[in-house]
Image (cartoon, rainbow, N blue to C red; front, side):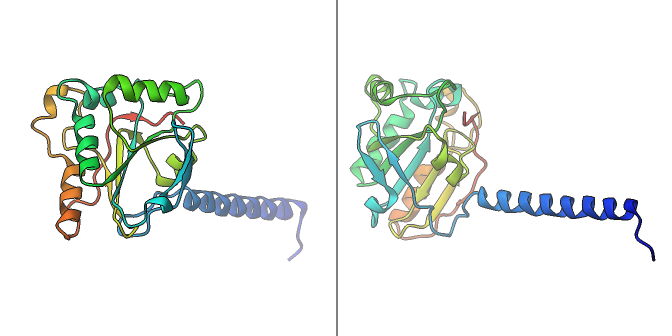
Amino acid sequence: MKLTRRHLTLAAGMMTAVALTAGALIASTAQAAPATGGAAPAFAGVTAAGGEISLADFAGKTVVLEWTNDGCPFVQKHYAAPPANMQGLQKSAAADDVVWISVISSAPGKQGHADASRATELTTSRGAAPAHVVLDESGEIGRLYGAKTTPHMFVISPGGELVYDGAIDSKASSKVADIAGATNYVTAALADLEAGKPVATPVTKPYGCSVKY
């Protein structure tokens, strides 16, 4: 069979399409969210207090990651006082020696972005009590975990296993009144860990505002 210029052009086009598809699959895999039951992705980040922390710093301890954006109505719901739901969870976690890390992945110029000064003022004015506030301006940590919404919650076991990924509770609304009747998945996951049991509900669908990468 004689190869014409048309045949060669078609072949080149097919090879390009295959290469692009393969590249897209590789990129998709690289950005895939971690699975519960596996190792939590290692990370390091700068805190609002001016230091740097890494997940490795808390080996042997339970860690909660909370993605937050103070301009988001769903975040405002859980920080509203009363009932100061998020603040209560943070204080309860601290009392149980659980490390609570709030992560701000909003990019500069986007809703919820905060520099160290603003993040510290937010913590103080809301009576919040995370162990650390991490400033993730690049969105690197957020993408590493596949954080989709604010709030989006993750729980990591003392052994470094990701044991919960999802919503803070079962009522996907921005109404403060819905907090009381909701099942709090983070509290439940922490209770299961404390009791030495597998987390009964390891994955739920997170709700809230999209993370402003």
